[in-house]
Length: 242
Ligand code: ATP
Image 1 (cartoon, rainbow, N blue to C red):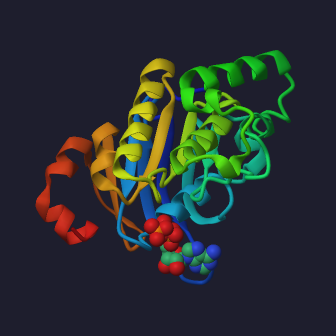
Image 2: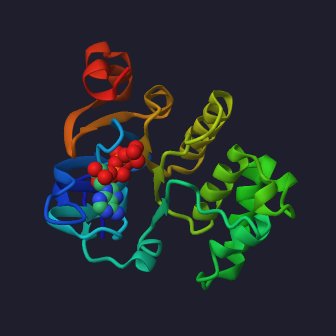
């Protein structure tokens, strides 16, 4: 497998939605191994729909999504993780009645290699120290930032090569958002993980991203270096509302 001529994830002409009128229209997007690509855009631009389409929850009507050289369209949700892609949805999905450890265990119930699953869990605790301190606490006692770490940690025990991450900053204080962003960047630097980061918080996202993609009304209006997007005042006024 692998596609020496192409990106790790290559999306071309992707059109998808929930009914007759498409939400996403003709999306092109590339991610190289170990890259952080941030997708930003105003409310309703289609960011969540893009992640849901990539992870097989929304059926595209047109276009292609190539992952490590093979088509991703038609992959069932539970097969996605086996192919190396993990989706952390908006709202985090932590089960608040279960402890941190139990939530992490849910991330690897399906894994055959139990020793490696245990190693991956230990690595999550090493990486996210606050979670290690709270390993026996139920989810409802965690702060917003700790819950976000747990949601990411649960995805990581499957040892993905690409993380699809929906609005990790949602509801978090700026300081906590910046901690989460730093952790993501360190994770990428240490493990070579690729990240598709959907965010409304443009400054935070672009501070760790290599490339940025701006979505407006379901279309890609700009793809550029993250630093250039962060500095472009006209672009921010036109598409991002600040
Ligand atoms: P936000 O930042 O507010 O989450 P977003 O950029 O992630 O916005 P989406 O959630 O992808 O945008 O929504 C894009 C469009 O699709 C919106 O017009 C929304 O109303 C519509 N939409 C989203 N989910 C559904 C659904 N399950 N059924 C029908 N329409 C939907």
